[in-house]
Image 1: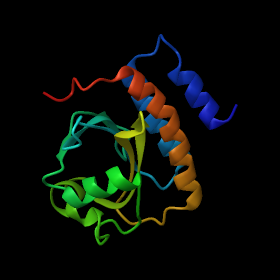
Image 2: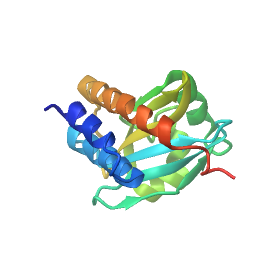
Image 3: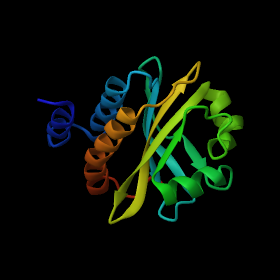
Length: 169
């Protein structure tokens, strides 16, 4: 069974908790894209003015959730990712779109490369899956992008059917 089929099977199990499913998505991304150290699943607020981390697995394999990022602080990024559905930034600190994260996010997490893809609900961006490289830069490959898009498609079904906007008050 290929990786996407295994992921689909895992995500469809009604006896598995939502957090375990989010964790499995992150671990699948880390396994499928070896140069990715950190993986996050983020949910946009209904008006796309902020996003909250549903799950992040860091370079040490530790999971966390609840970090919030605001479009007011990271306007270039929010504008781009909502319109374009993809950001490939191998040199994230110098990329015109992602350099807005240099203070307050990249410096906190030691991030050097970023590969993000949106997942959708009813043709509208619902959130993103974010691949990050810490410690040094990496050149994202076309195969990395295709794998992430495939995983994002699987994740979008789960997230759009199971996650409401209860994360935003």
